[in-house]
Image 1: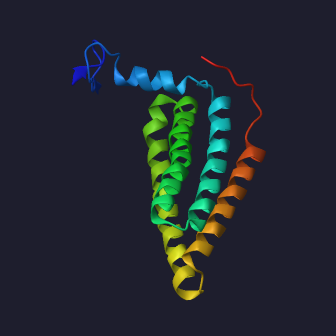
Image 2: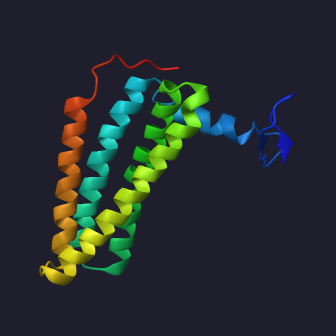
Image 3: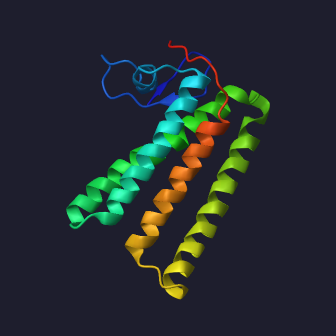
Length: 161
């Protein structure tokens, strides 16, 4: 562990003294596409599509290994949505309010996760849905959510760093 900067309380992990700090490497990868709000918003829209497609394929997978690979690919989209939406919050919320906004964001995520898990279990147990059928429907719902995202996202010009 090393101090990130003089007078900065943040610590960062370093793997090798010859390499730049981890944050710099991650920042360089993200900047391949840009770091503007417009680029992040577009990437979130693509991530909705990636997740929906791979969730649908996961529901149809005939073998466990293929299902695992498809689920991992689907969650690259989920991860992109989570990280890039958090980055948008960081860009748009004042420093003094950011912690409160992230707390509300995480609380809402936790509540929706619990409610959707309960609803999914209820649909499987009480209403006769098969797991593959339910997963296909959920992929469709996510695809519709992505279309809403694309329709509501502000139209801005993307800039690259």
